[in-house]
Length: 153
Image 1: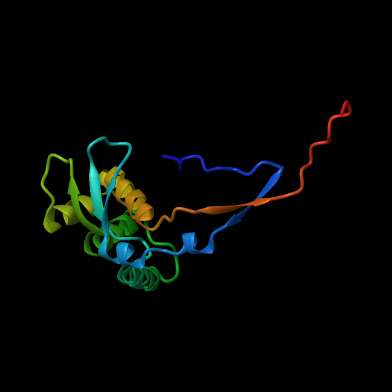
Image 2 (image 1 turned 90 degrees about the vertical axis):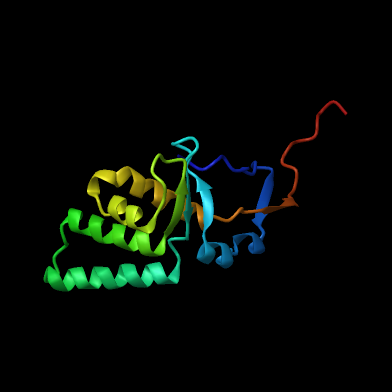
């Protein structure tokens, strides 16, 4: 799902971004938050951000292990899917609601490490990205008027 349309300045005005509106909410990213998944009405995931330091460390270590194991070659996609699922279940996903199976860490691990549940993994990734989103604010600045005065005045 694409982001909602943002206000776009016209050619007669310039827009300045409020720097403070670009600041990440690190507490929310680390603690996690409930995010509704728009493609599945009634389904929400409680997730941490993909910028979570523990996730980044675990992901990077896994990629290093896979590089050593595969002697510098790219590991098979199914192996990465399973390994990424383990990391998501440990460091990103904290809960779900709206699914017919109650959340538990064990069920999450089974689902996220099964390549057949790639849509669930994709939904969790999307939600984890949303936790890190900021609401960009603009300051409107007046610029010179580009319209010509009427000739009949």
